Length: 176
Image 1 (cartoon, rainbow, N blue to C red):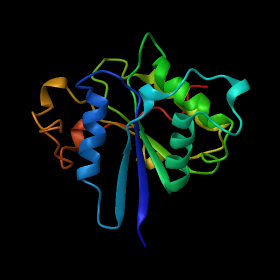
Image 2 (cartoon, rainbow, N blue to C red):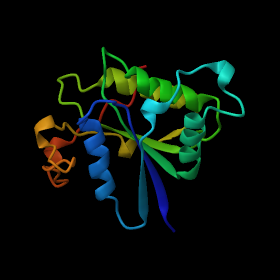
Image 3 (spheres, helix red, strand yellow):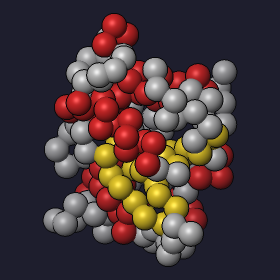
Image 4 (cartoon, rainbow, N blue to C red):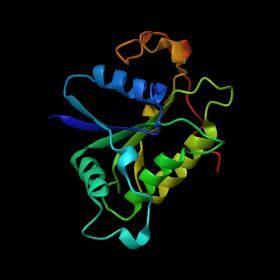
């Protein structure tokens, strides 16, 4: 049996560390796991509850179809001004009106090298995912500080050695 994992990044930045983390994760997927990186965050219209019905805006329909086709979702997002980036929060808002995320296993990678480690963004992500009744896979929610300098010309993290357990830390499970 193959598990389909959807990877969703929360950054629009060219050369994003978060996107590089997800691309690298895709290359490290074990046998039996296929990955799909969602690339349409910048095409989503601003969330409008009045537009959250059939026919959905095409970009929203594509997002929801990608989520529906996945067995699980892995997020990697930066923190911006102490919260989730606006475009990423917009993506999450578009998932609330659909049923695709409900009871879906989810996790995130926190790639921040900041001393606070983007904890506000991930606490907010946890809150939103709670509203969606997702199954947060705590063991898969990790903080792996990734300096921008480790991104190679191929867009992958070059210093990605899972045996370096000192690089990993568990984010707080809840601050609420």
